[in-house]
Length: 207
Image (cartoon, rainbow, N blue to C red; front, side):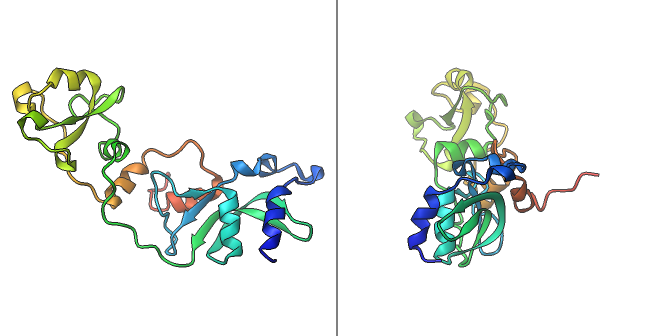
């Protein structure tokens, strides 16, 4: 079908009333994102999860940039064609992931599993310079740790040894692979059934 039909299809997504028996058919298309896999059929990212809105996924299909691995029962329609919205797509060209993640607050929390590195708490999180900046400490992966606000206040401008507050784990610069492994422990609120084989394929099966 020509790309000119895509714009029409994105506006015409009502399904036939007599077919409203599958849960997917009750979804608004905006609630039908597509999980994006690399060409080797592994997710581009676990956390944040690599998903595209349905419009982007459908466009990529028509541009022949992806293969459809699985789909929703929800359809979008043009005047001449009906297409089930993709729920899992795989890139046709492999994208080499970077070795190291960006140094951001979110990635720092993910490295530390969203837990204070002094007390283990998971609330009111911020970050702490292990060697305080006043003592020459730098803002780097190796010198910044997740801390809850009370521990951060208690430690103040001291080193962990000076404050008698040992770290649970010494901070390191993580690889993207390490963050992906940590991310699997914090799944998003929404996981479509067709995604699970691709997100947890290497998890030990339950008896």
